[in-house]
Image (cartoon, rainbow, N blue to C red; front, side, top):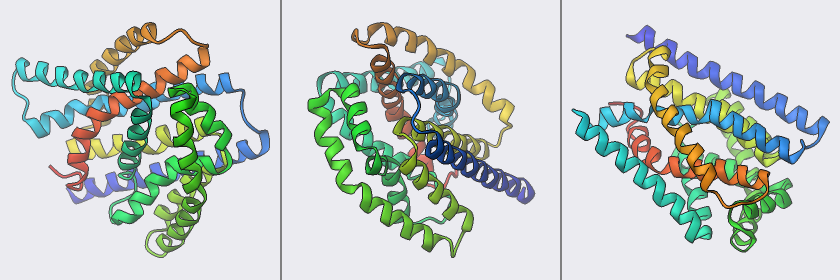
Length: 297
């Protein structure tokens, strides 16, 4: 058992090294080549999130089974109804109260992403890490952040939120740099991961930086931890995720048809982030209960 546990810890560390490598390549690409075409970047974001990001949420039935002791089809149907209802309420919030939706989504993202650092990171370090992912892009890309938020919720709702992020962007850079220096004494890889997150958020355009972070750090790490939690093979995880993924894709097609008529890139951006927000709410309710126990049954 000890050897198996050690192998899984090593797998998470290898994933961390791989993320740092991809982040470094992205940073160099961003500095040398400049920003991508916005339409191409939005399409790339959508493809990466759907193919590499969303699958980690499709593993939620594992946590439902463990936490709720699901027995019989009636309880599974109830779980699916609960999950979809929370997702639908999130979409309704975006439609009727866009400012509240955007602020809530960003705060939930900070909390959720704060679970990524390796065990041993303190609460303040985790919180700063989560804030850095969301706030640091506004340091050098404030105009782009405002444009993206405006496409997502309208300029009236977006401007105060983007202005708030600009206020905390550079303090977040300084605080994260200090955290990296302190963490390097305890765990160099954790410090390197935090530095990679900060550099990625600072230099890459917001959509590209988020796509790399979400897929290569957050989603990949969640999948590895879910495998350790459930004590199953990666092949078994794939089988578990297939049905939810197909359901998500089917609902995504319906949701795309219901989005307001707007330019293609704006519509795609709304589709990606509103869908992520809708799935994040029930996903967090399940996963955070496990995360705060140290990923133990």
